[in-house]
Length: 200
Image (cartoon, rainbow, N blue to C red; front, side, top):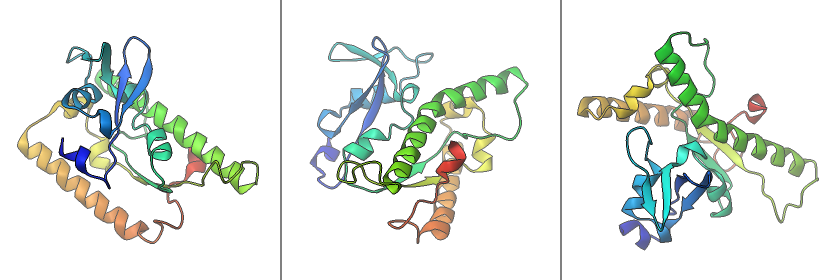
């Protein structure tokens, strides 16, 4: 694969090991078409992807996205997370379809929230001098959150492959990234813009 030949680009593909209930991360050296398929294998649509005798489903069940490979596998102090599913919502869903949508959002966001809380705690302990700075580093977290228009989309939208819909999503993503860049460009490399305290 072309990405394997890129020295400056890291690649991590996350998949859920069905039998062991663990997260498997395929780095660039282990990347393959099967690893890509495994990382996006929704079990109610596709059969598990077999790689080296193990069966895999979508990595989102165990890490969505898993931050640990980005922390341990790179020397970057800034992490920019592009959030697709909303963590917080204003109203409790009451209709069956919307309840299922929220159940999916909660399931796929829970691991991210746990990791963010852990990072917040490590940053606090570092600031208080309770952890050795040579072993841990203060991470600056940025998040590009979902547009309200994205948050209103149901889970079925993730299966929508119509060209016009994908173009609309691309335009929304570009607009949100531009807005984030304008609002937070001075924070990159200096401070995190994500309020970790709000997640604790």
